[in-house]
Length: 316
Image (cartoon, rainbow, N blue to C red; front, side, top):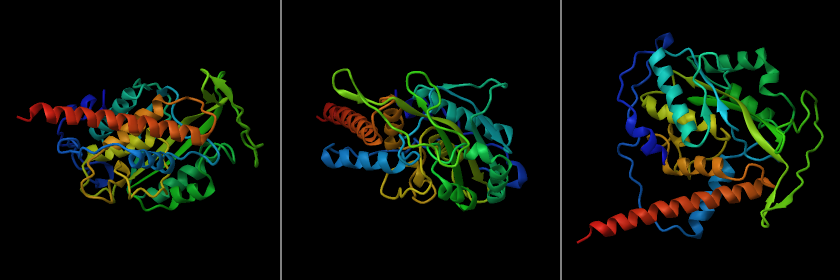
């Protein structure tokens, strides 16, 4: 079941109160209410486009796989009024549940996704990194996008900034597969074996273990909060490099730059489903990207075939 059917049509048009620091968050609206995508024929060009999307947007640490959550997520929202915070947590949980994760909504759960709302986001980012540097860089390699990306997190003027930490784990045991707290971890090998007679399988998987998101209350403007919630859900659940060039893609990451983006797009949804249904420990990042692109293209073709059949059925 697709995300729009599962969630967006059920989002009420709430008019929520202002957030702290006197910055008003716009009310949520249904981003799928007017979403219509043209029916096109999936071919080699579409397949290449899907692969470029998966490779460019879904990048992990250098030399590593695109990481994803293994199962449980727990979301904490800080410095936001109760109604907006509940809406945001519910949206992330809905998307997470649709792709097979287990959102934990219990009050005592230990958060691994934290969303802050602030009117001084750069100052907040600095304080968070300085207060707990090991939380942002538990190792010098294999676990994040690196120093330059962390500088971007601290100095960005984007309406939404985020930082993801992942961890290489042994695929069969879940044990740590890299060294922590050292300047230069030993290079990681990725041995491969034949599985099911055809597909190469690696021995290491890459799990997201922590995501920090900061919303700049002064920069959100009049963007509907439901669309902002979709944006946050995407960067909380999918590997995404904030520095990636996204202008050529139909993605929620263009929310603040391109008119007409109202939330998660079908391409974003296809990517999330493909990422979380693909092989858990492929032999290489290239093999992972190719599999994700194949799944995205297959889903696009299936959807467009159904649309064409529906159009044919109503013609006289």
